[in-house]
Amino acid sequence: MTLPSSGQLTLKQIYQEIYGLHTNQQISMRAMSAAAEKNQPDTFSEFYGYSHFTLDPTSLDYDFEGAPCFITGDVDVSINVGLGVRWTIKNYSSWIFPSHTTGTGPDTVGISVLSNSGSARMDSVDVSTSFAVKTFTVSQRANGDTCV
Image (cartoon, rainbow, N blue to C red; front, side, top):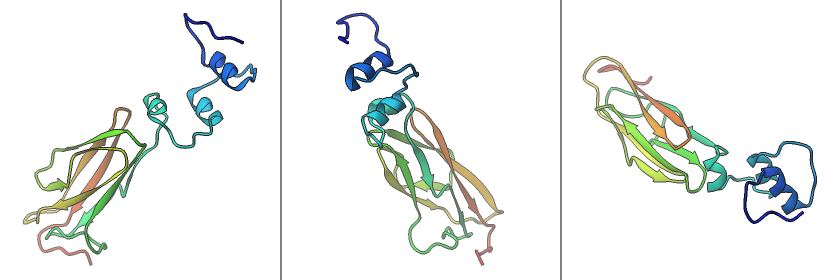
């Protein structure tokens, strides 16, 4: 089969031309990526919504002084996205501070919080890509309340 030099093409036509296989099944971008042995999404397939996007962890608990509960050292949130995927953190809280708020591809963002002189509080930050939004939740204990 020779592809036309102008006009519309279907994914099925492209699949048949590239792989020489005839099929009666519907062909998707995901099927094309699998046939090309691409286990990791590329920018093109991410544009069509074929991308992973996770945060790890998705929430943290802090004591009243701003120290993370049950974690030693700095608190980092892993933003797991495909290469080339741009992301942005939207933070509406006056007491939560991400180390940076924009990036491209997988990254780690430090999260720090101010000490709390009042009652227990909870807030969140949103991590957005062009195809999804994930929320990271921060809880902080009341003044004088430790993690134990």
